[in-house]
Length: 143
Ligand code: DQA
Image 1: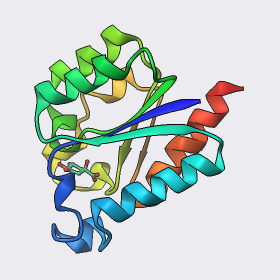
Image 2: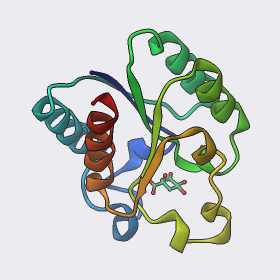
Image 3: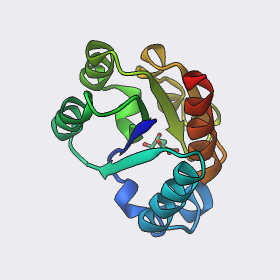
């Protein structure tokens, strides 16, 4: 399977940003672990990070024909980006939403995901393991 992984806004700050919530690992370390887990499942992965809504939509569009599934941590766009939501729906990419933190147990504005309705599953609150579970889930939809 070819898996497109999109890391949304401010995830480039991992390691520095709120370690009590997001952990100590940098984005580089997290992405390396994602690639390792994907390789163990026999997947090819493309991993991108962007802080821009339109750039994320362009990445989704540019990689939609290559990807069999999308794993996305939309960052704060989770809570209000109808544009990213519509892109996922419009491209028809099987998508899995991921969060390092448990958005259901944080501030009220984080408890809403406008992305969730266009995703097959959501994994949250387990740090990097949320991503590994999302990849495992992709393996399960292949069967
Ligand atoms: C996040 C949760 C979002 O609310 C936040 O804006 C992020 C990271 C997470 O991975 O826990 O940037 O998506």
